[in-house]
Length: 173
Image (cartoon, rainbow, N blue to C red; front, side, top):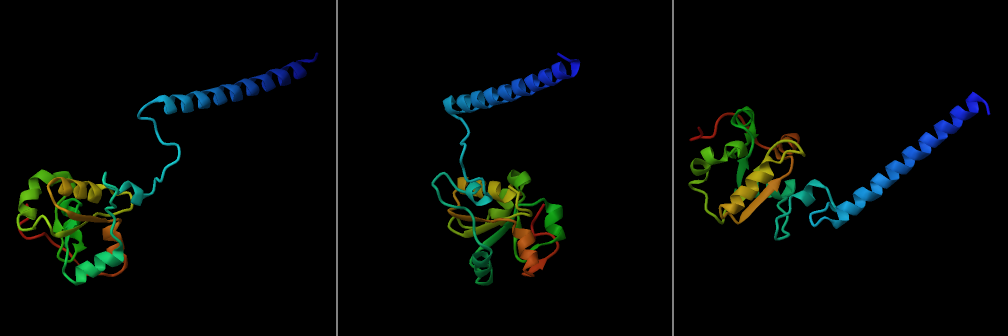
């Protein structure tokens, strides 16, 4: 048997062993995942809307159209979950700044005159931004009953040329 033939056989054997090891590792990983009580779901809805569902099953998401209706009818309080410098650079007209990352420092001042039954819409910037979701969940924990999240709110609000303004919220830190 020539050296080239032995090399080809060794190469094929190495490829076969590698494939077999990968297959065994995959099967073992799936098996362990299924046996664990907190195993990951293999089939799930990973969309942003699906991640914005409360334990009760109610969705926190509000459509841009519904948010616009509430804005123009003045039936909702808009809360910007972004950092104060981003809020000052531009925000939904009339919105208040309650930055999630400084929730404890801002909460009492921003929410003092907002009733627990008020319609509240939180927003931040970017589809992957979770600040508005975290803020909405914190507000529901504080007893607010009608809190919704406008996904990618700031960017969508601007793109639709809806009313915006710059500057600080009166009474902010």
